[in-house]
Length: 113
Image (cartoon, rainbow, N blue to C red; front, side, top):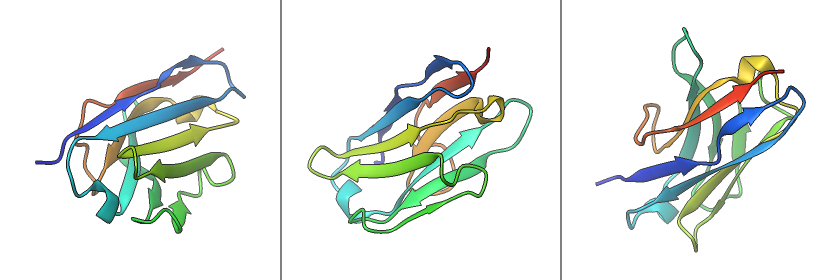
């Protein structure tokens, strides 16, 4: 059973930074491509970033490219998302997933002045 727990969200001003974490509680995490997805208020789920199993390949949505960095530590079964130069439109619930749908409870990111 895939179990993922996100943390690290919060309220931040535009231009600020946050680091999200996602701890996986299952044994095959290190063999999987992982994604960060988000759900902005009033909108549908958006894919944000992807990282391959070894952490050597990454991909980003155009809206976050150059501002967000996805990484992982397979020794800790943990996925990360560094959010820099945050904009109000980055507000939403952020989830990690092995696919394109939320698996955990998510962590809320609110960007507001």
